[in-house]
Amino acid sequence: MTKSNSSLTIREVCLEDAALLMQWWNDPEIMGHVGLPAGLGLSLADVQKSIRKGKSGESQPPSSMLFMVLLGTEKRPIGELNYSGWDPVRSTVAVGIKICEIGSRRCGHGRAALGEFLKLLQSRLGVSTVTLDVLARNIPAWRLYEELGFRLVRRRRDAYHCAETDELLDVLDYCLDVDG
Image 1: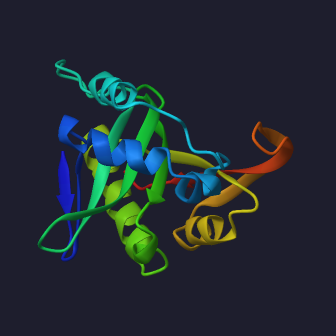
Image 2: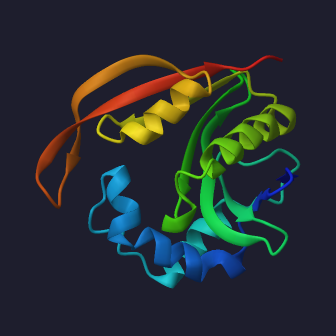
């Protein structure tokens, strides 16, 4: 499953991506935006296991899957996307996105990648409803989601406990109904 626009490509994660994903997922600066200020602390084997779990030899796509966001003709990795909780009966899926390369943030790449990803999910999985959640303090992220048409469903007060800082953080739940 690959989707491309003029400067961005979205492709399924492969085992060759494991070292870079491990670097990103363990980086406090990257993961702090999602409530993990110390990163995930994963080993290369842990990341490889996650990648293998998302691969399915079955005819139906797996219920969750990881993707890379690649920039330019050189296809330089700048971030990741994922879907999870795909329910083919209800046509729903949850998504997540991180632009991990600091210099690639706030350049429109997240908007373009998420827009292409939504099209890909609609065509490949036939989803009609996409959900996501975001920490309320991650203002750039939720502004982007709202600009793309996601609507705020609810604010969950103190819903996320950040173990590293012992903070209780608010979480915003968003929903987008996509045309069939």
